Image (cartoon, rainbow, N blue to C red; front, side, top):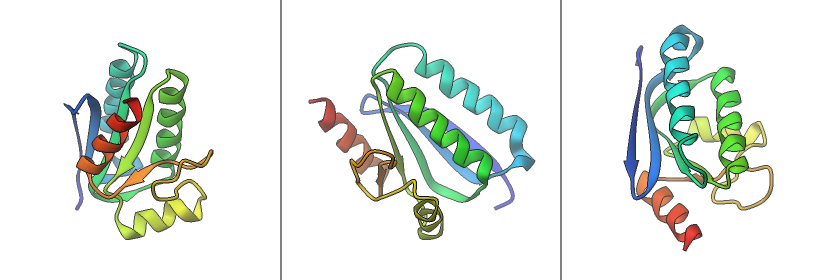
Length: 129
């Protein structure tokens, strides 16, 4: 996959950013624009729920890891919720080695990860109930 794309949408009251292809410095300009749009949408109201869907992502570099962390902090500071979904086994292993991911962990310092987008939406909506 030698391309990059991000589709933003709403699902079940969650803002979903679904990435496709490679998230690398080669596509920095497009990625920067998508990041700015995500931040703009998050700024519209407090308590937003953001899901980063990586089901169709084959690669991401350190730039994206930093952005994931920045987005999770931003959402948390606005009393919102953040989750990843659809990480491949390889990318999940990478995030675990970086000590950022434990599947479905509520432990401080870990990012929440779910297998599917539907599972992530359901979990984040339940937390608000």
